[in-house]
Length: 221
Image (cartoon, rainbow, N blue to C red; front, side, top):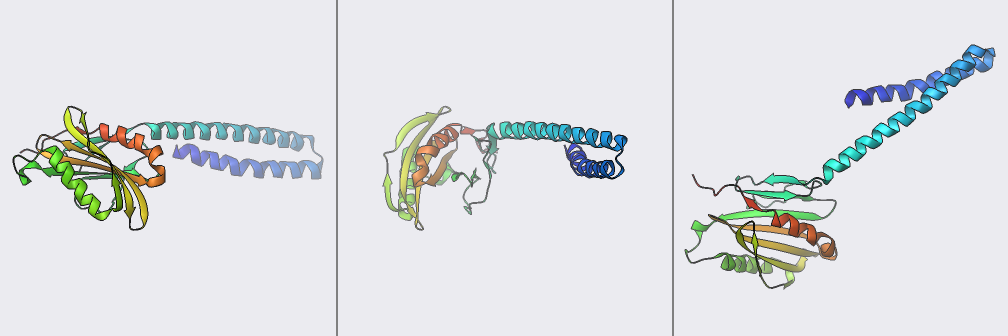
Protein backbone atom coordinates (compact mmCIF):
# COMPACT_ATOMS: atom_id res chain seq x y z
CA UNK A 1 0.00 0.00 0.00
CA UNK A 2 2.90 2.34 0.79
CA UNK A 3 4.47 1.70 -2.63
CA UNK A 4 1.17 2.29 -4.39
CA UNK A 5 0.74 5.54 -2.46
CA UNK A 6 4.23 6.72 -3.44
CA UNK A 7 3.66 5.87 -7.10
CA UNK A 8 0.25 7.55 -7.00
CA UNK A 9 1.73 10.74 -5.52
CA UNK A 10 4.47 10.76 -8.14
CA UNK A 11 1.96 10.36 -10.96
CA UNK A 12 -0.31 13.06 -9.56
CA UNK A 13 2.64 15.48 -9.39
CA UNK A 14 4.45 14.50 -12.58
CA UNK A 15 1.53 14.29 -15.02
CA UNK A 16 0.24 17.86 -14.49
CA UNK A 17 3.77 19.22 -14.87
CA UNK A 18 4.36 17.26 -18.07
CA UNK A 19 0.93 18.24 -19.39
CA UNK A 20 1.55 21.95 -18.81
CA UNK A 21 5.01 21.67 -20.39
CA UNK A 22 3.63 19.88 -23.45
CA UNK A 23 0.78 22.39 -23.73
CA UNK A 24 3.18 25.34 -23.61
CA UNK A 25 5.41 23.75 -26.22
CA UNK A 26 2.42 22.99 -28.43
CA UNK A 27 1.24 26.61 -28.26
CA UNK A 28 4.64 28.27 -28.68
CA UNK A 29 5.96 25.98 -31.41
CA UNK A 30 2.59 25.19 -33.00
CA UNK A 31 3.77 21.62 -33.19
CA UNK A 32 1.37 18.79 -33.93
CA UNK A 33 3.64 16.39 -32.06
CA UNK A 34 3.56 18.51 -28.89
CA UNK A 35 -0.20 18.97 -29.28
CA UNK A 36 -0.67 15.22 -29.53
CA UNK A 37 1.61 14.78 -26.55
CA UNK A 38 -0.39 17.30 -24.49
CA UNK A 39 -3.65 15.54 -25.37
CA UNK A 40 -2.18 12.16 -24.49
CA UNK A 41 -0.88 13.44 -21.15
CA UNK A 42 -4.25 15.03 -20.42
CA UNK A 43 -6.04 11.74 -21.08
CA UNK A 44 -3.50 9.85 -18.96
CA UNK A 45 -4.00 12.37 -16.17
CA UNK A 46 -7.76 11.87 -16.20
CA UNK A 47 -7.34 8.09 -16.22
CA UNK A 48 -4.81 8.26 -13.36
CA UNK A 49 -7.17 10.39 -11.28
CA UNK A 50 -10.06 7.97 -11.86
CA UNK A 51 -7.91 4.95 -11.01
CA UNK A 52 -6.57 6.57 -7.84
CA UNK A 53 -10.07 7.61 -6.76
CA UNK A 54 -11.36 4.07 -7.28
CA UNK A 55 -8.39 2.63 -5.38
CA UNK A 56 -8.86 5.12 -2.53
CA UNK A 57 -12.57 4.29 -2.40
CA UNK A 58 -11.86 0.56 -2.17
CA UNK A 59 -9.30 1.11 0.58
CA UNK A 60 -11.71 3.29 2.52
CA UNK A 61 -14.49 0.72 2.14
CA UNK A 62 -12.12 -2.04 3.27
CA UNK A 63 -11.09 -0.01 6.32
CA UNK A 64 -14.70 0.72 7.22
CA UNK A 65 -15.59 -2.97 6.89
CA UNK A 66 -12.65 -3.86 9.14
CA UNK A 67 -13.72 -1.32 11.75
CA UNK A 68 -17.28 -2.63 11.72
CA UNK A 69 -16.14 -6.11 12.75
CA UNK A 70 -16.32 -6.85 16.51
CA UNK A 71 -13.03 -7.17 18.37
CA UNK A 72 -12.14 -9.43 21.28
CA UNK A 73 -10.41 -7.83 24.29
CA UNK A 74 -8.82 -9.84 27.11
CA UNK A 75 -8.36 -8.47 30.62
CA UNK A 76 -4.81 -7.87 31.87
CA UNK A 77 -5.17 -10.74 34.37
CA UNK A 78 -6.23 -13.14 31.63
CA UNK A 79 -9.51 -13.99 33.36
CA UNK A 80 -12.07 -12.48 31.01
CA UNK A 81 -12.71 -11.88 27.34
CA UNK A 82 -15.11 -9.20 26.10
CA UNK A 83 -16.18 -8.72 22.48
CA UNK A 84 -16.72 -5.05 21.65
CA UNK A 85 -17.41 -3.00 18.51
CA UNK A 86 -14.50 -2.66 16.11
CA UNK A 87 -14.44 1.09 16.67
CA UNK A 88 -13.49 0.58 20.34
CA UNK A 89 -9.88 0.66 21.50
CA UNK A 90 -7.97 0.29 24.75
CA UNK A 91 -7.69 3.37 26.96
CA UNK A 92 -6.56 4.43 30.40
CA UNK A 93 -9.44 5.80 32.46
CA UNK A 94 -7.22 6.07 35.53
CA UNK A 95 -8.90 3.22 37.37
CA UNK A 96 -6.28 1.10 39.11
CA UNK A 97 -8.73 -1.69 39.97
CA UNK A 98 -9.83 -2.23 36.36
CA UNK A 99 -8.33 -5.06 34.37
CA UNK A 100 -9.88 -3.86 31.12
CA UNK A 101 -10.50 -0.26 30.03
CA UNK A 102 -11.90 0.17 26.53
CA UNK A 103 -14.27 2.39 24.62
CA UNK A 104 -14.85 4.89 21.86
CA UNK A 105 -13.89 8.39 23.00
CA UNK A 106 -15.50 10.10 20.00
CA UNK A 107 -18.70 8.10 20.46
CA UNK A 108 -18.68 8.69 24.25
CA UNK A 109 -18.81 4.95 25.02
CA UNK A 110 -16.80 3.56 27.93
CA UNK A 111 -16.36 0.17 29.59
CA UNK A 112 -14.45 -1.16 32.60
CA UNK A 113 -14.03 -4.70 33.88
CA UNK A 114 -13.19 -5.18 37.56
CA UNK A 115 -12.71 -8.66 39.05
CA UNK A 116 -12.44 -9.52 42.74
CA UNK A 117 -11.57 -12.88 44.23
CA UNK A 118 -14.37 -14.54 46.17
CA UNK A 119 -11.83 -15.43 48.86
CA UNK A 120 -11.91 -11.78 49.92
CA UNK A 121 -15.58 -12.13 50.95
CA UNK A 122 -17.45 -14.28 53.49
CA UNK A 123 -18.48 -17.76 52.23
CA UNK A 124 -22.18 -16.89 52.28
CA UNK A 125 -21.62 -13.75 50.23
CA UNK A 126 -23.27 -14.16 46.81
CA UNK A 127 -23.43 -12.23 43.56
CA UNK A 128 -26.61 -10.38 44.53
CA UNK A 129 -25.03 -9.15 47.76
CA UNK A 130 -21.93 -8.18 45.82
CA UNK A 131 -24.01 -6.23 43.28
CA UNK A 132 -25.83 -4.41 46.10
CA UNK A 133 -22.55 -3.42 47.76
CA UNK A 134 -21.02 -2.09 44.54
CA UNK A 135 -24.25 -0.25 43.67
CA UNK A 136 -24.17 1.39 47.09
CA UNK A 137 -20.57 2.50 46.56
CA UNK A 138 -21.49 4.04 43.22
CA UNK A 139 -24.44 5.91 44.73
CA UNK A 140 -21.99 7.65 47.04
CA UNK A 141 -20.04 9.18 44.15
CA UNK A 142 -22.95 9.87 41.76
CA UNK A 143 -24.87 12.97 42.79
CA UNK A 144 -28.66 12.84 42.56
CA UNK A 145 -28.48 9.19 41.57
CA UNK A 146 -31.53 7.41 40.18
CA UNK A 147 -31.24 3.66 39.83
CA UNK A 148 -33.28 0.73 38.61
CA UNK A 149 -33.83 -2.55 40.41
CA UNK A 150 -31.18 -5.24 40.03
CA UNK A 151 -32.33 -7.36 37.09
CA UNK A 152 -31.38 -11.06 37.37
CA UNK A 153 -30.13 -12.76 34.22
CA UNK A 154 -27.73 -15.36 32.89
CA UNK A 155 -24.67 -14.55 30.77
CA UNK A 156 -22.92 -17.46 29.07
CA UNK A 157 -24.06 -19.84 31.79
CA UNK A 158 -23.14 -17.53 34.68
CA UNK A 159 -25.57 -15.90 37.09
CA UNK A 160 -25.62 -12.13 36.72
CA UNK A 161 -27.47 -8.96 37.69
CA UNK A 162 -27.83 -5.74 35.71
CA UNK A 163 -28.72 -2.25 36.83
CA UNK A 164 -29.10 1.21 35.31
CA UNK A 165 -27.83 4.18 37.26
CA UNK A 166 -28.06 7.85 36.34
CA UNK A 167 -26.78 11.01 37.98
CA UNK A 168 -24.09 13.69 37.96
CA UNK A 169 -20.37 13.09 38.28
CA UNK A 170 -18.25 16.22 38.67
CA UNK A 171 -20.97 18.28 37.01
CA UNK A 172 -21.52 15.94 34.06
CA UNK A 173 -24.79 14.03 33.64
CA UNK A 174 -23.90 10.35 33.24
CA UNK A 175 -25.89 7.18 32.54
CA UNK A 176 -24.42 3.83 33.64
CA UNK A 177 -25.39 0.32 32.62
CA UNK A 178 -23.66 -2.02 35.05
CA UNK A 179 -23.54 -5.80 34.98
CA UNK A 180 -22.40 -7.95 37.91
CA UNK A 181 -21.38 -11.52 37.08
CA UNK A 182 -20.80 -14.55 39.31
CA UNK A 183 -17.65 -16.22 38.02
CA UNK A 184 -16.07 -19.47 39.13
CA UNK A 185 -13.63 -17.91 41.56
CA UNK A 186 -14.33 -14.20 41.12
CA UNK A 187 -17.08 -11.62 41.22
CA UNK A 188 -16.94 -9.47 38.09
CA UNK A 189 -18.18 -5.98 37.30
CA UNK A 190 -18.74 -4.84 33.72
CA UNK A 191 -19.33 -1.11 34.05
CA UNK A 192 -20.41 0.87 31.00
CA UNK A 193 -21.39 4.51 30.76
CA UNK A 194 -22.12 7.42 28.45
CA UNK A 195 -23.69 10.86 28.61
CA UNK A 196 -27.21 10.77 29.97
CA UNK A 197 -28.78 12.22 26.81
CA UNK A 198 -27.14 9.47 24.70
CA UNK A 199 -28.22 6.42 26.69
CA UNK A 200 -30.98 5.41 24.26
CA UNK A 201 -28.42 5.25 21.46
CA UNK A 202 -25.62 3.51 23.35
CA UNK A 203 -27.27 1.20 25.88
CA UNK A 204 -28.15 -1.46 23.25
CA UNK A 205 -24.44 -1.60 22.35
CA UNK A 206 -23.51 -1.79 26.03
CA UNK A 207 -25.94 -4.66 26.60
CA UNK A 208 -24.59 -6.62 23.63
CA UNK A 209 -21.00 -6.01 24.71
CA UNK A 210 -21.61 -7.00 28.34
CA UNK A 211 -23.52 -10.10 27.20
CA UNK A 212 -20.37 -11.24 25.34
CA UNK A 213 -18.60 -11.62 28.72
CA UNK A 214 -16.73 -14.93 28.90
CA UNK A 215 -14.46 -16.30 31.58
CA UNK A 216 -11.39 -17.82 29.92
CA UNK A 217 -9.61 -18.68 33.17
CA UNK A 218 -10.61 -19.13 36.79
CA UNK A 219 -7.41 -17.49 38.03
CA UNK A 220 -6.24 -20.67 39.71
CA UNK A 221 -2.67 -21.84 39.87
